[in-house]
Structures are given as structure tokens and as C-alpha cells.
Length: 162
Image (cartoon, rainbow, N blue to C red; front, side, top):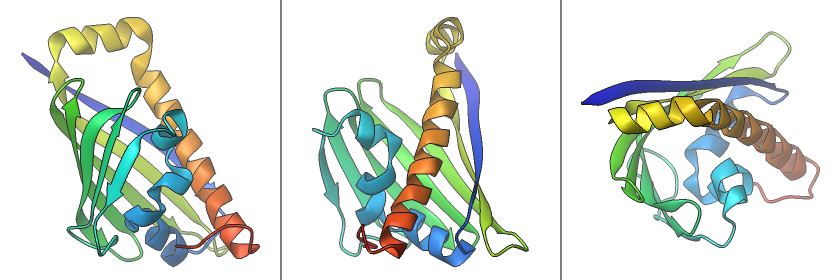
């Protein structure tokens, strides 16, 4: 029996929605801000050419992060990026990651990172018992803060914008 899950994190960024959308959509920039790559920096990653837009793919294989692929399934600039997340190992599953970018009146934006999917009942129970769901939301928040730092570094000339 499968159980549905949803993880949601929000963060306000001081950058225009179009800049934030472009950074999220470009999987060639994923390692610069992904909380999962930060946890497993020795992971082997591959990025499709082109690295952004619908159909772009990012693959990973690592000791901590397992193995899988992200595929940009939908991109509507500057507001939405939807990714299919296929985990091959350690547990095979498919989830949907969605980034909603909403511009604010101050010239920045709020980003909401949502991941939805299903998992076996025993993994749902384990997630509840270990606090894994709260940890995932924390990773998403860390990732959104790292995205902001990445954009700030690019704006200051300290980091790469692409």
C-alpha cells in the first residue's frame, strides 16, 4: 500500500522572479545550490545539453544521495518549474518537484519548493518515526537559502551565473 506525501518550503529572495526562475530551470547550476549535492559533493553528476528548459536532465549517483535523475517537465517563465524526480536507488520511486516563483512589489520574489509523491507504507512509518519529513523540509529551506547565496555571488562577481 502506498502513502502520499508532500514537503513544502518557502523563502523570500531579493532577486527578480525572472532571475530566480532561470537559475532553478538551469540544471547546469544545480550543484551550486542543491542541498542534496552539498550533502554528497563526491556524487557523480551529469547534465544534458541544453541544460535548461523542458526536457533538460540532471543525473546523479552518490554514496549518500543514491542514484536518479531530474527532468524539467514544465517551465513557465518566470513563475513555475516542474521537475520529474526519478530515484533509482536506494529505493525506486518517482516524485514531482515544483518551484513556484511569485514576484513581490519590492522587486524580489517568494519561492515555494514542493515535492509530492507516494511511498510504501513502511517508509511512511519510518519517516514519521525518524522525523525524516521535517528533515526534508529543512533541506529544501537550506537549498532556497543556498540559491539566494548563489545568485548573490553571481551578482557580486564572486560566483558563476551559469
